[in-house]
Image (tube, rainbow over all chains, first blue to last red; front, side):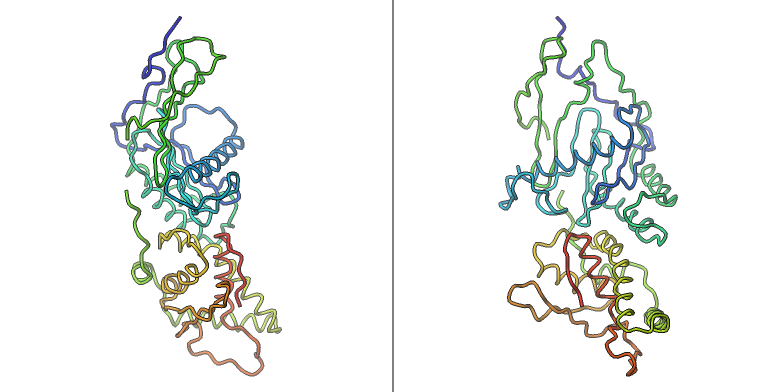
Length: 227
Length: 154
């Protein structure tokens, strides 16, 4: 019987050292769920076709926003579970981290959602996301040929994004998310924390000592183990 | 990290690109003049101005949110104040005031003391019933619609 130790199952990727681009992917959605932009700088693994990928991402964000709003310990006024929140209302999550990537999220009151997937050791990207929103306004909104709600095809916008990434976020050159020996696919991405405006949800999942993949290990407990 | 507070209208107005006020006023006057010539009916012109304003408003809201960094307003009163104090200051350089609230708090008037659009303008008698600044109504309506607030602006 093989036992998988805690930190060996899904090793953290190497810390980036060289200069260049640290972001892996970027999504921009509008309030209706239309994916206005999907940009990929560094993504070795594609599991879904683009439409499914976008739908999955949008659904994930919707659920996480509802979850963080309902579990908010500070805000007194919470709607009923399942009622969609207006953009900007209530407590919204701004990032979640797994052991292989960090996903940062920003939503404006007008419903534009910007998602950036980066290296897990990246710091708080809220200012970067605001800057990207500014770029969106400059190159997309102010473009008279662009019709709101349609996918973005602006070359200037793409170039500006590439330049911003190269200058401010460092490059991660060898992204090998190669599975180790005896590795189980289901445990590749381990959720670590979801950060929202008012609190951070930490998550630790216990590892089962069984090799049998049909038994799903129970989540052990939720406690703050690191900030 | 504490979020940066919303910047005041003055600060933003001084930091963004501006155009000559007379150019703006005269261009707008030319647009209205041309619409009157093309459509001839005053109501049609009003509707067209409102539609143009709406198209501007749905894009303007993103620029407003990006430059001012304000978060969602709690109620309609705050929204009206935000439009009057920050919005108008940021885009037109003038401050408006909010007044005439009704009992419910659902209806108000935004007063512009000096409106840059109407400088040098005199309406002739043939254009009675023309809402010269209807484009502003459309802008406000479009912008609020993008933040999930259905309004009627006249």
